[in-house]
Image (cartoon, rainbow, N blue to C red; front, side, top):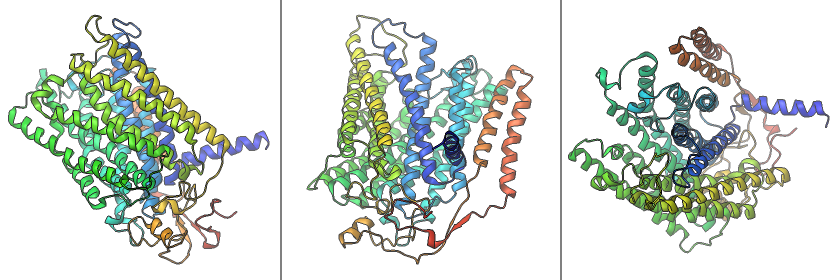
Length: 624
């Protein structure tokens, strides 16, 4: 191939991804962007652990440590874990319900670009005067006192990014409600689709409080509104309520899709239907409901009083019950099954004791008097990471190996995958298990350094060595991805051989219209039912006909870019920069101009003629 042709091919691919509204390509964009921010957050974590490896260390300054701490938490929660899960939701959920795309493909693309530009804006703070330094929760008393523009980057960046996530949640809800294939009743939906559904509902109700609170913080800092300024009659505790009314459901927004991924893996590699499917569904819904009842257990030390503390303590205990139901159902799914210990299954099995450990320490903190002792120690850090890393990150790694062949048509190396698992899993427990004891010994969290002779030296060194192990594991995953991509050995539609749900019935990777004919769903695990009857294709619910698909659009990128530009103008106008107001106005003109263009543009999409469709098990896409 000539250099010119190669350049044109690369440029064509870039343009394709900038303008795509295909849920599968948007999923890849989420995985690339989320993976980049995950690496960034991991590097920040490594710098934190290097600083705390030995007492009286001066590897980084106290101020820079606060920035690292804030950016690590903010990046991992908002810019890595959630977008990576949104990537899997985008890639798999429409296939599982037999849909050709999500309900609003344009909004899907807009949601991604808003997330991306919000995350980019936030991380540019490193190069433009300093990152936010008030912790990932950005409590108002700290964030109002913070010098420079770090907190402004935090507020504006998360605001832009949060709009994108909210759009994604609404889109998935409408998709699942309206676009299920014939016969796909709610109680026939795969568990990953159910957890996507409940997590999307949580996004719908949890993100508005965060949006409101960040607006108030933004107005306090940019315009002196004094919502949180106690000296002017404001109230800093209101920020904590707003933040945790979002922040605790956010934990379930992350963990429920992780539960869904593991449910699919346990069922597939035990060669059994998921045990207690109905109870799993109701437990998922109950977790979502109770997730809004427990936010003030983050605030036991604020002084809400014994009645409020008791109510939230009881609710915290209660939410352990549906989670326990899930644990036992996963164990009983494996019981008597024909288990295959593939890389995804190893992650799934390892997840159970890891997550249970995090859940048990959570119940310990649910007792308000005990929480007074644990609060602001490394015990909390250990608990939180056992839940998020031991639950969500293990699910992301398992899901990457499990769904990679479906998304890209190639299989990640099992041998390198086991190497990744060993280093990451051992490193995870080395890093965080010992932090429980550091916390019980009195080591406060968010501290820049510690003194020798307090019994904290060995524990911190072991924790830092564990972080290095985790880093090696993640690097080996990247190596695995590169080797797999270079080899490019194609696999069929059901590469694991035990696929049970609709996504395993079509080509890997799927053609951009997903299903030539919408399938007829005749029960739970519909593809498994067909295979048990000796069929390798799905029973169609419609005759073959033309398929209508949406056109790609550059408008989502432009709308998001306009907000990104406007944010700089909004932030620097408080410094009386002459260019700030024109930049603010210019960015808003770009955004609203693109929105107006979209509203008047006559975009009817395009048709794929039935003679151009391929067989479901063919890997070639559309006929040339």
